[in-house]
Length: 171
Image 1 (cartoon, rainbow, N blue to C red):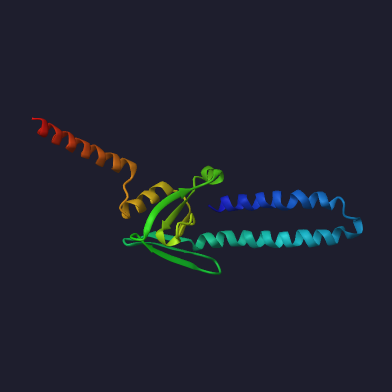
Image 2: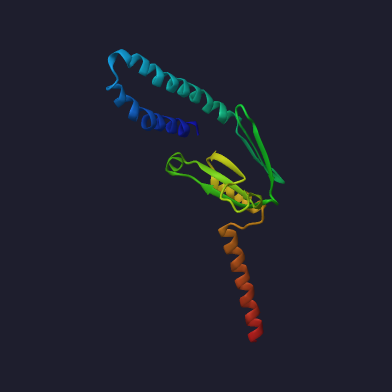
């Protein structure tokens, strides 16, 4: 999980900072080059060191639990965020992942409730989990929604029952 965020950090530095700061350094007069490097490179270095420290600390704080009655979530380094959503309030559990998360085999399991007022924003997000489809199916099962295989099984049983009723009616 940490590798994903370190890769994003590297990408942002290369594209967001080095793409303009290195070419600009060639046009800065020699007597002002030290000032330029200190004013650009020092804050970026401090931000990189801080972010490199923060990423592992953040992942140490992440806790999610699928309890008997609710989903519990806690995370945060400086400001702890704790949330509990009962299964009765959950309307949908979804998955999201982009190309980098697919490469690392990670998912975000999003939990939506009616309280969000039709917004696309989830009430809670279980971040960067490896077994996202299983977690989503477990939550969906606890809120009373059937998986596709369960739905197919129920539909087959209903169809068999209807066929038996038809045979009885025709005879």
